[in-house]
Length: 190
Image 1 (tube, rainbow, N blue to C red):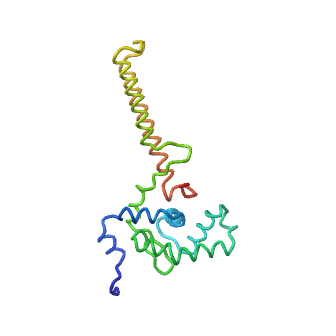
Image 2: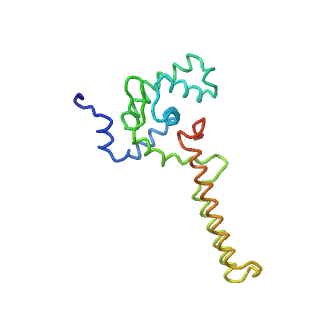
Image 3: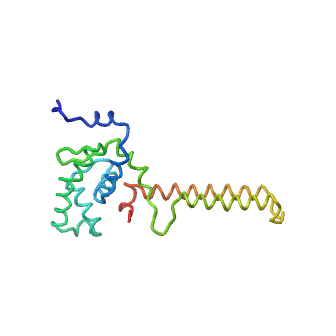
């Protein structure tokens, strides 16, 4: 039986279809919460607080877990226990109970906000806009016979389709690689 004012994980998940955007941005604004989500996703959705704190401390200090000092581990453990995990539990993305942290189905709502653009890259929207302009210019040049008809017109159209298809495949591959829970380290958000 639940005490007044408390809800089970199932009740929280059914009462809110998705997390409000402001709450999502607040949750993801802190690197420890992002690191924690990444680590929990790597363990198939459940982790002990002590293991979680050790992994987050390792990522924060750019060290292997075996080299983390007790003060580095303790600093993260305390912060996770007192601030970050209760915040994520209240938002409904995890269930935090007796030192065990488990992802809820609401955690999947955060994935769409994690479109990480590496520092040496441009946003995919701008890339596709540029590619569309280049392909439109090319096809227009073919249509008004600015390009000698050595290559059939259909080949130019197929080239445009191949460029978009290749770009989309690479985009999907890169997006999956940069998701929380994918890869050894969390995606770099700086």
